[in-house]
Amino acid sequence: MRAVVQRVTRSKVTVDGNVTGKIDKGLMVLLGVGHEDTEKDAEYMLEKILKLRIFEDHHEKMNLSLMDIEGELLVVSQFTLYADCRKGRRPSFTNAAPPEPANKLYEYFVRRCKEMGVQEVHTGAFGAHMHVDIQNDGPVTILLDSEKRF
Image 1 (cartoon, rainbow, N blue to C red):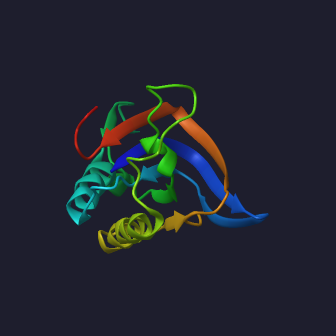
Image 2 (image 1 turned 90 degrees about the vertical axis):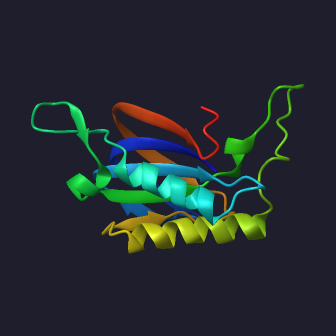
Image 3 (image 1 turned 180 degrees about the horizontal axis):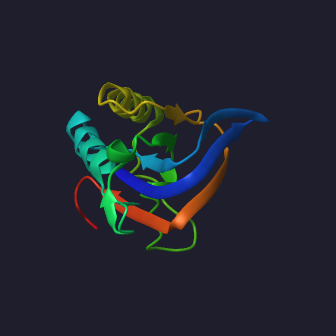
């Protein structure tokens, strides 16, 4: 499982002109599911993302997590995080999970975020063409991989 995690002051997702998810201060997570990913990978990402200390404390040091600040979370599925661009000019997506198992793990991740106590969890629309507005704060952008490749 891969994620692009961005600290934001606000973010929203629009599908066919309708806003499906909108947050203020918190994290915007673009989440990709690989074809070998399991709930174990989702749990690793969940633990890492919710406890990642990338919000500033009163000393202006990145020392607080999303949970510490009671921030909001916007999770958007993005299979293109598994793009392989090493050969040619057209990306290969063979490492991305097929839609059905990918959606199952995506929904599992979102459900577990709520169960872990994130008060506001919003999403895009799995498999839809989406427009994502992100006001990155910092900018702070973190790349995560459940297999710890980076």
